[in-house]
Length: 110
Image (tube, rainbow, N blue to C red; front, side):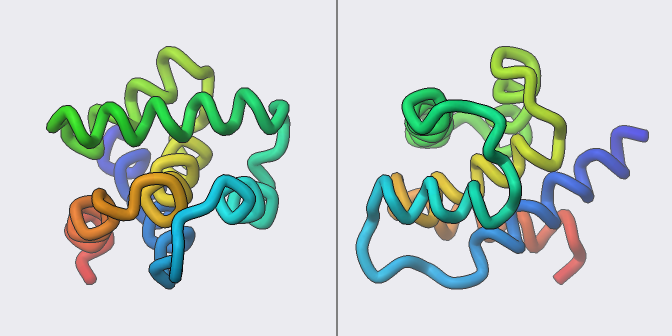
């Protein structure tokens, strides 16, 4: 079961991260969440969780643990937590983009 959840989160991250942004932006992050249908929260809450993911990654927390943090503290499904991490790395903290993509590729076997 855990392997399936990890794979789903990895696929969600990879799908959201496919193209690196030209410039980081909050509106781009919100648009990625909307496109992935993670829109059950206010823009303010979405940004809060995106920046929390960035802070977690920048502090050296592994991607899997950051996803778990979003699931436990934010109530996200594994897929949505992965999407938040992927969108955040693409748009809010592009310095973490390669870290997240490396993890996602390892999960999907790419």
